Image (tube, rainbow, N blue to C red):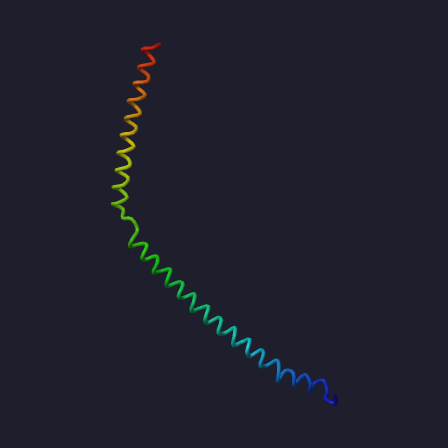
Length: 96
């Protein structure tokens, strides 16, 4: 134990700290590159999915056709309800 504190400290830094810090820096650098490349792949997949959805999404003319069909069915139901309501009112007047 004749070594001085500075010699021991210098040995510790040279033998232990520098390799450990170098390894940590290398790991962080590689993880960052991996993260950035993975993020780019995710962005590309998302943009491809958006394009696919835009291609297969319902066309405006199809939506208009469906809306017209629903509207005509609803109007027929409304007309039937009106006729039923008039018959009910007529029957209640005749009984009353």
